[in-house]
Image (cartoon, rainbow, N blue to C red; front, side, top):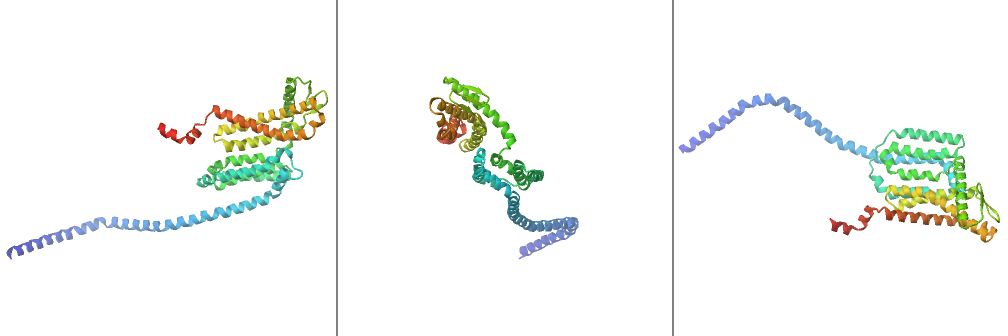
Length: 357
């Protein structure tokens, strides 16, 4: 009993000492930490309020960003359709209409292929983060000014090119330069759908006439056909051959360049090889057209001059595209054998790559 009382007293005194120390130390700690505690409590309330407001702001911004581009895109498309309805209709008739331009009959395939490229790259384009830039605004103003000059001055080329400049400015303004670089190839490819002005076309056509006539004359002399060239006229023994504008090769040149770009995009992944195929389409088209004139000269000399101006002349015009495409394909095969694409070989032979690793 005595021991229990002693322990209780000791426990009581021990607890009393603790209470005493707490009572003596508590006023100092409260006096020393009360401002810090009040500041931390105020900061905690501000943080809690910001945490509650942040989701609301992000939700509202997400709704605005998900809704506004659709309305903007629809409004912009309607405005472009209203501005360029007559211009695009006349351009379409120049491609496939009754009074179509035979030099630009390939133009209708250009926007179709551009849409195909955009559709094929749709996942990559969707992954590009939009970064709108005000630097697209000067391009929009420039496009509208070119449209006004083209309409008021009856200049079709200006009004048609203004559409591409306006589209570039709109993409940069609403999506940014990264998005424009992602669609740079199909945007630049659309230039091939616009007919070249007649003044520039004539400056290119006449040198092609002279070059085709010279090459055809050299080939005829090579097979010992008596021939004399006077400018763009090849004089044979039976009749002269006039290398007119339609036989200059400009039509096949423009069409073959377009086909070479499409072929390079579909069959080649290396950028430099695509550019090389597009550039090589120029000498291939000139060579094919010269070979066509050479064949016509052989028909005049050894068969019948009337046959050279009938069905065979029309048929040779279509045959030239086949010959040019075969030459382009053969050139691509030769270049692919010389410059082997190591990435394509590694992708086609994954087992050998694993074995070497």
